[in-house]
Length: 511
Image (tube, rainbow, N blue to C red; front, side, top):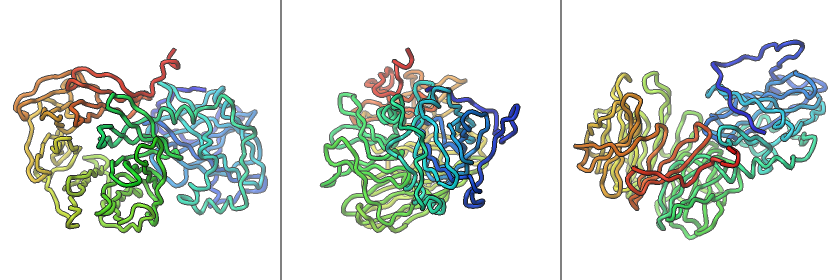
């Protein structure tokens, strides 16, 4: 039931295969109505991994032959980790053969026993078929794939993100699967127990730590270093968490597919919040309180809109700010950051500046960047310090490091003995500055206890990981799971030693 991802050198067009086998690109049923003996088929796929940027092609094979059909993605940009496919197939019995992510240039070819585990589906001419959701999850360096009972159909996805396709299923869709879910298919249970990713880490009032993860999950760490999974009813990836002090919630979480969740104080599950008239999109961040109301950053295509509503439940959301993300030949894809401040919130895009909102007055203000340069990355710290990597114009120089101790009113340049700077400088609870990057291909963590005048090497440090200083004085270190295995590590001694506290690594699978 496992396969390894194949790295492709480029995009492969549908071509004639050896012998009499062929590959046919399924037509779009909105453009070409199914012919007699054909049916419209829908399936969605959710990936619990940072290795995949969203599949954009699914191939199915007619049972007993080598003839394959390509189903194309509809509603592109709908979500980060979930994609929806609709196409037309001739009557017959089929099995899933492969899935392709052209952006990451990866092909997931299903193995024979994996195909048997998922099972076959049947298409009867003239009757639409809705196969529901398939779920992909890493197991060390391999993958598991199976059906997702939590998303048994795609009616809600189509209703919200592809309504023109929904009418094709108005007469009632067939379930399609030729048998019940295989007893060996426990991919959903396995994946929801081991969600991949820890984004937007925040500390709660009780000292616990929370992080947004995939498959509708928030990861929570207690003071002893143990992590647990707080589950929601869905499979949507969560993108940020916000500790709050409300009668019915101590935590809010937002994510793709308009997901807004709350946790009742002390509960172990997350409950949906009615988003009212909020437009469709991915919710990137949330800030606010009961008196000032709530602000969410919503991504639609390349447009980020900040909405405000006095009420959280069934909110009447009104746009207050918009930022267009773009792609530059010098700086790459534009990014968006938003974080709570003591008086309100702050946000920025790559081009800058930093915009700040004071909740009490409702007034916006700006914080200029050093030399009006671009932002490569910006982060806040438990001490209130802001760390910045700024990009000089032209795109031919490495980003330079700055700090601000008064929320961007003044910036201080830091001289780092690093040729490659991987992240903004950060500050621990005791005032120690940390920086990490590389020289000659060697990456290390540096520390300064005299405000950046002198730096000392702490330890080697792996590229692609993210530091988070805790108010208690320890450090957390997370990764994106780009190699399949994801881990959260903790250091009690400023980064000299690390212990793994949470991982999706499975030693039994390795054995």
